[in-house]
Amino acid sequence: MLEALAAYYPQIKDVHVGAVTASGVLFLARGIGVQAGARWAMLKPVRITSYVIDTILLIAAGLLTAILQQYPFVDGWLTAKVLWLLVYIGLGTFALKRGRTPRTRRTCFVAALAVYAFIVSIAIAHDPRGVLSWWGA
Image (cartoon, rainbow, N blue to C red; front, side, top):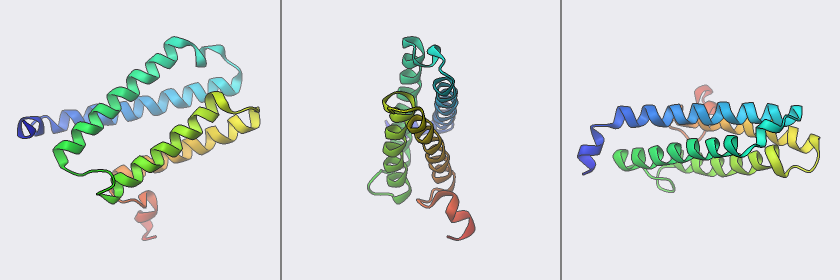
């Protein structure tokens, strides 16, 4: 079964990358909307869209993990991605909803975007140091 699935690796990777992009763009848009006081950013259809995109992203990630036989908590770069993903999710909840003050929401939003970018750099580099590995750090 894994061999048959491996034949679809390029398509699954494209779905994963597309979902990562869509998730990031939607988070950026929602974060800007929350900062501007726009009600649409927290409406149920927008939240559900975010959940659907993130579910697709995670399913594709799971399939890629199985195909490549590289696993979080075994392979360092995937471990880093998962751990930073948890940080990103936490910051995102404070940026969009749980932050009690506008300053807290703004700070968490900027920090979440920075973590998102770092996670992407880890994925590109296949290195837990992400972008830092590009300069030999």
